[in-house]
Length: 215
Ligand code: Z5A
Image 1: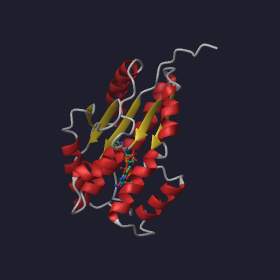
Image 2: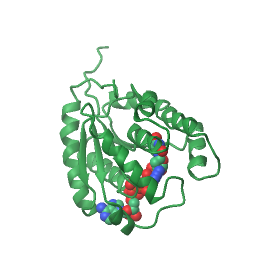
Image 3: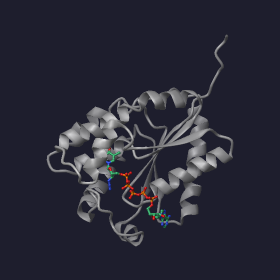
Image 4: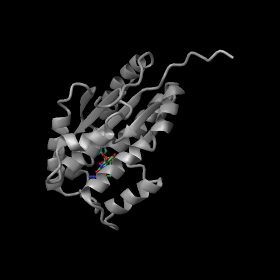
């Protein structure tokens, strides 16, 4: 039987600082795409459901300690273990809307003392290249209005400021299709921007091969 000519789905990533609204917006985008008849699914990293994800989750909840290089590699391994599933879905024409990806991985570890951006990028090099990475930009004062920091590791204002600086360095990389979204708008306003960029990229991705990140 002849293989059906199929158009691949797009790989769309949402990144941003703490409480920028990534999860809220990923859910709304998937709903909107489905309503427009476009197959779409949400994923999130870390995916805490796998064996590796459970190690990460315990670390984030401060129930365990892990050496900094080790936890960086676990976050990366957690993405790599899902690559076969991601590729399969994209090939089936499903657009993946992903809550955090390798950019969070690099920004959070390189904000720790003694880590270079370069070292942090290595383990994630070659992952499926997102067709679009939207960075939800929100200043710390506005984030504070959305509630207190949680109790998890990394949820302090000094660390989040260092992370923001690392994201800014990563956003200078022209090999990645970054779009900065003003996340201080209301939920519908942010969604409108995100949906517009996404529909645009879903069309373009259909006929383009999936790339490899940072290669
Ligand atoms: N991490 C890492 O170190 N290495 C890695 O490789 C990866 C991650 C992938 C777990 O993240 C931690 O792991 C994270 C990075 C690190 N550490 N930190 N910080 P997580 O994904 O499990 O949890 P989270 O990312 O910390 O969630 P978040 O950033 O706090 O939230 P968010 O997804 O951006 O926002 P939200 O849940 O959609 O919304 C937050 C609140 O604001 C909520 O009450 C909303 O109703 C409200 N909200 C949302 N949008 C609006 C607007 N537009 N106006 C007003 N209020 C709003």
